[in-house]
Image (tube, rainbow, N blue to C red; front, side):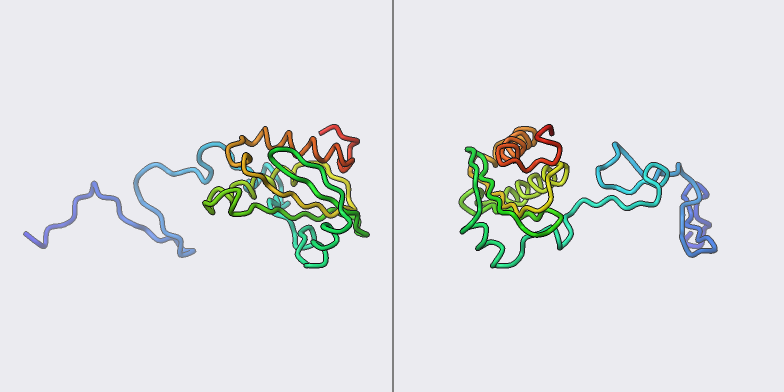
Length: 169
């Protein structure tokens, strides 16, 4: 019969007074599953402050003149995985740019992964303010793991004297 009542074993959707619906039966799913993800705002653990994972516009090199100053007046240190070029600026904070060309990684996924890794490494480092820095990736960086790349960046920053805590990162 087509008019039989639905089985009571199937859960029904109930809408609350705030318009948010939920299932009547079944276990409640916690809001945070698995290991805590970096950069995620967890009330109670971080209070009301927001965790920033990206650089603000002020912390990025964007203008052609900034890159030209790096090329003409910058000092550079090289490693087989990476080149770091830096020039002093008149600002109280450091600014960064990351270059990962198609010759380094023809696949966009690999280029973006290298860029994300470099950004995260630099974001965590205690760098001195007042410098514009350009990190240029080389081919072998695609196969390198995060800790290896981190070690290279710390070494290059230390060689140029750009770490805020005297080179102990």
